[in-house]
Each structure stands twice: as C-alpha cells, then as structure tokens.
Image 1 (cartoon, rainbow, N blue to C red):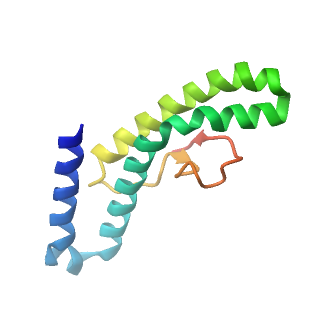
Image 2 (image 1 turned 180 degrees about the horizontal axis):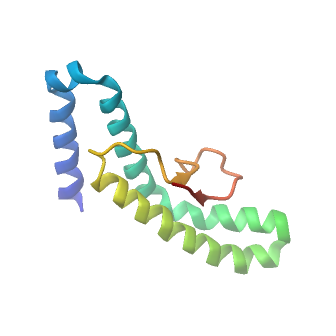
Length: 117
C-alpha cells in the first residue's frame, strides 16, 4: 500500500512539474489534484464514519439507537467512503466531481454521508 501511494505521489509530482500540462489547461491539473486529495483523505479517514454515525444517530434517535444502528451505519459508510477513496485515488488522472458528499469527512461533520453521481 505504501509503495502504491508513494508511486502515485511521484507520478502526480511529475505531472505537476510538466510544463505542457500547465500550458494546456490549469483547471485539469487542479481537478486532478483535488480528486487525488479526496481519494487519499477518504482512504485515511474512512474509519471516522463509525463515531460520526454513532453521534448523528444518537442525537437523532437516542443513545441506544446510536450504540446499535449508529455502529452498523458507520461501518457501512466506512466501507463506502474508503472504497470510493481507493477508486478516486486509482483514477485521479480522470478528473470528476466527488461522489461522496461531503467530499471530506470533516466538512459538515454533523451531516449524514451520501453518494451522488
């Protein structure tokens, strides 16, 4: 895993340093960098979905629901966020909008995670 991330960082550094990429379309490079950032952040912080969903469910439905439904919802969201993080990191050369909303887990922490095209 470390070798893959290291290789992706080296590749992205080479692409950012290539003058022809800057000359053609700076927004492409920006979108590509944003997608890579979303991907790496979502891989690293996917586990935070568990306490986040415990908190959200607990505040909305009570402590017992937070300790049961919140845990399972958090595990489901953790798998989703981490999976999309892996996909975004692997395909960062094709810039798209983030599928996971909010894009970073720390954005709107009290909002439930959703997935959009």
